[in-house]
Image 1 (cartoon, rainbow, N blue to C red):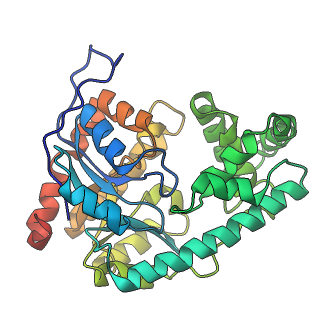
Image 2 (tube, one colour):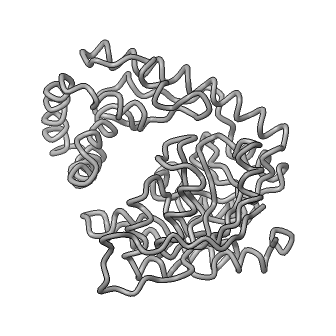
Length: 350
């Protein structure tokens, strides 16, 4: 389920000229405006091509490519190959479904239920933040997601920081986080990540470790899904829709999914593969050493067991693809991974 074409948007204005762009890099994890991304499907293909990335999988959170967009993509003449996908929330982490049929009734029914669940969750979280004194409403959060998309945590963050009067209160919680980070390792990691990311993406990055992670500084805002499937049920939904099930960004869930358990799942064919190239935004930060070690450990395990290796930019914005275009060392690691999938699963090849 892919599209091919011949559109070349040309170089990015102002892009670096002292590095060689790696042509034909690949990304099997990308988000659009349908979840927490910022671009349409066509915009994603254009900006990917402009940065040397000629394979993209559309894997929005708990939502499939809508039929009308899928039809447009199939008729689109574009040089970038594209894959129909989804990122399913499960009880043990996120699982990518690659090559899924977006018309599959069971999977589509599940996405409808999850959309309703996400709306309920967003309302509760917005109300909890309002009770803490922030100016925020569920309606403005939902408006940022739009009628056709799924509401996600970034929509909550964007709505909160859009009100200037919220910043002083947020700053008081940031100071509390800084103090708590001195004695709590989990909060320390979250604080450092937020501090570094805020230099690029703004003060909203602090909202995640303070309120929106599963073990936040301030409990009571973050809500778990009440209807998310088990990982086994999620993988079944993907496979029944003709897809391959790939564990996403292992480093986020590694405490709940240690390497020994990952090995068990792969050995028992409960997963088809794992993302083994991920975390580009961590390079150049204090998290780089840990990220490199995690990438290495997972890659060695997957290769040992003969499972699929998948490249992940986990792209949400134009700047993510521009960073890929400037990062030869990362782009090189993604080359040829889709072709290896075709070798193992020839029925997926167009």
